[in-house]
Image 1 (cartoon, rainbow, N blue to C red):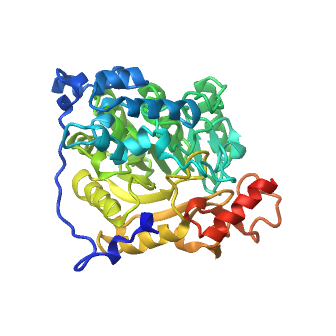
Image 2 (image 1 turned 60 degrees about the vertical axis):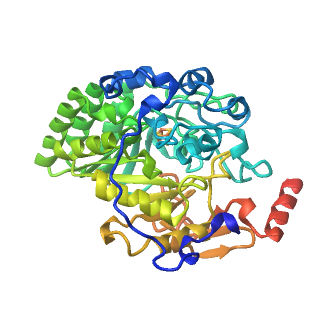
Length: 458
Ligand code: SF4
């Protein structure tokens, strides 16, 4: 299957040739719409937010006629019929597409960051745009809410969704059920409580459940929580003595690094980090970078600033996607950029979740196992990321941990060793097998025919 060619098998010599690549800020003046933008404007978080690209008209104002009309039509078709996320691109992020030359239609179509941040209809699979088992809330996070926005899935950890917006919207967002504006195809779930009431409910739950020691503070993206509110929430968490780990989730570190370099944010984070240190709590930031081209000097500056003010670690959780980063070379280039140039630990790559219209991004489990194999031995051991599959009703499993695998039909079976919050009284929960599904277009013909028959019978 040529789309899953193994880099390691095709070349003589070392399969991966490491070369240090220092980071470069792409020249934004190559875009007609930003010809006169100064460095001062570029580095302003406010300028970046005001000039985000939210629709085709605004994209046209930046790109002009660098890309032809067919591209805009393709994008429009996607937005009307297929997209699960609306368009939202900070200039910083758009500037990392075709970073080393003035884009044209072909290079813009081929760009890895464009492929997931600005998807077009012809990117998707027409035969199987969605897997039959794809769902809006594929990880059932909403089902496991114990308070609005608070998911209790693992015994000792919770996920706190503080808000439902981000400074950028990713086409493959796993929380497409809740995050972002509604699109013509997806009417989004809404948070209903006032933020202050939601946050109080989270704290009350944590105080009442001392067995929960680890809080992932997410959204959306915490960069969209007004700083004073976020600081109050974090100080609230730090006042609960049983909370020992706090992890802040923000893709904006790469999408809008200017946010994390603002004076009030830096000073506030320093206060939180000092309090965490005094109380012996591990405060970390988790970001979401999928391709080395997203790493620029500004991103590295923001990551190092977080470490300087006392955050214990900055880690990356990328998503494995076909056409974006699903080769050994792409993954290792990104990991070396993170680890060697930006001070960000390569931590996880998630397999793309089974949400609607995501089949063209997803890879089969066997291929993820192969990528994990081929990445071993190049990076320091502690900085070698694990590729994980987030199995519905189970949680994260390393890709080699499956119990059974039916390759013909693309169904892997997984086990688990704890109950989620909705299975407290389910005696079978720990002895069942839980299924995960490979993309159908990657199956042998007999497997594809089998799924087609299931569809007809359904
Ligand atoms: S930043 Fe995260 S939560 Fe926001 S759209 Fe992207 S993947 Fe979804």
